[in-house]
Length: 262
Image 1: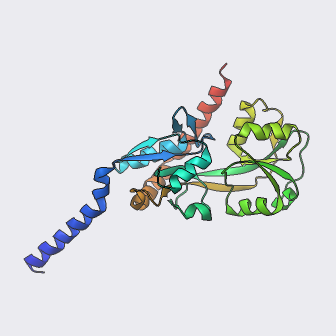
Image 2: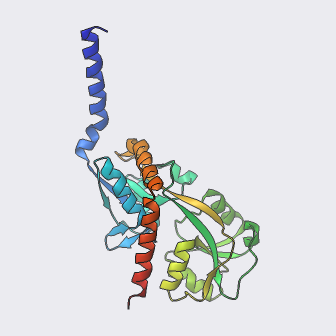
């Protein structure tokens, strides 16, 4: 290769690099949001979002030279809408659905496994061995929450779904027999039953609905979406090192301890 051709090739490479990174010269602070009430993965604390998801996103982007600001923009559905419209860059922990793939790109590596359970009023347990055992019953679900595309579809087709804005509402409905069950995360179901004063009265059925996975998603309108492969790599490192497991245990213990304070 001649010296002139070599210089042209190097110049082209430099220009490509500059063009691909110039957007980050203007924006080095990434905004992230998450579910307002889904410990230990993410929940609201003042005007910020805290938990395993925000911590993981902060650690990942620190390796990429990007500061993360975990913001509280409102209830879960509002967080997803903010990501949809590019008002927030990242959703820190979410199930991947066809709808969400329309406005965000998700890590191939999951942030964490999230086992879903059926919670019922103690003394009103029923046999649950397959989803069909839920058909014809009434379920309380929180607005904007996904349980994975297949179970979302099953609920829509076979279950009478009552949507609520806040979790305490569906515990009250369970108590008054207005609904038969609540599908929710194994961690969060126990946590919120205790928080709302129903810890001994609300129980999970033995078999899980499913074991799903939470992922990190980047808005397709975000300046940071091109970093997804590197985000995925860093997330895999955190999982392989046991850091995600450690963060999950830490946040779960802290949240439960806070509930016990007078």
